[in-house]
Image (tube, rainbow, N blue to C red; front, side, top):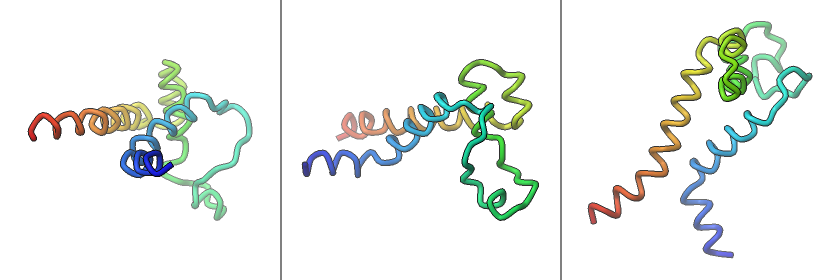
Length: 99
């Protein structure tokens, strides 16, 4: 149990980003859903980040027209997240090779 806790603690960010992408891949954005957006929950009509999740979903399904329609930076955000995941996977190997 202790090893599992240490593994999750050491790789928390990696687990978070992979889980986020899997969940965004599996969502059905056409249905009504709960939002985590604080501005939307406070009743504001405009939020600069709203639609990024849907945009990432459509980008992962290669529907770029709908992706850009939801948010123009969704594809960019997807590439940034994928880049960060690869960094988190490769970094431990780089550290062990230098020791």
